[in-house]
Length: 99
Image (cartoon, rainbow, N blue to C red):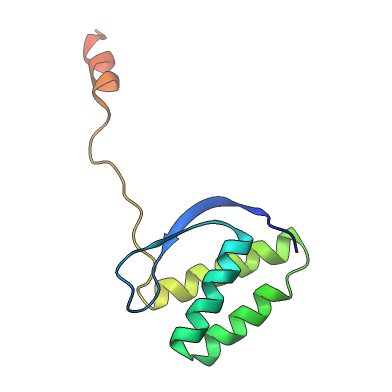
């Protein structure tokens, strides 16, 4: 399958790697899982890799990405998205100006 952009890019961590990796496309996700399978030697990761390599449609690729995110979350390798605590100042000023 060619390099297909995924709906939402995300960061993921490899075991024993201090920096997170930004995943923007299905191809990058497959490369990440290959490296993860080499590092981890877990049969579940190798199964996930085979599933990703056999993806031949956008639906199967999307399903494989979801499986990948579930495996990452189960192992604590999917960092939580950064959510701003406060609204930007311009938005706050606009709300305060209204009666």
